[in-house]
Length: 190
Image (cartoon, rainbow, N blue to C red):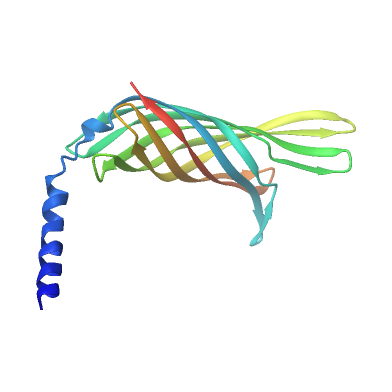
């Protein structure tokens, strides 16, 4: 019986501890820059079939500004650029992904003094370069992207993050083009 009473007392005190923490969007607002490392899979699809162009590492950076909109809410613009090592070769012909540009709006909610969960929605552009025995050329395609992720503060200015991202570029030379991407990295708030 004493064990049950002790357990009930511990459970009853947990909400009090959570409420005692000061959670504020102040911990997450301001200018920020990030170094990003990811893994991506650009794909094409047609008639219900999905084909991978390749899967590879991506790396790059992001800059943004988060403005405090409420006690726990921040929002602001961002811009991202990532280089890619995706390559699909057949004989002497290769299709290489050159890079990805993203820009849009990020909306975040502080769930604790150190954790911000966020969503992103914006414009995305992907660039490919084709190399054949007849020469080479490049083309890019714009579309829409969305992401969800979380920032974890490691102090007053430094943080780490993890994020998943999906971009849909619509028809690219008559075939649907998408990009699936996971990323993690570190950032600094000014």
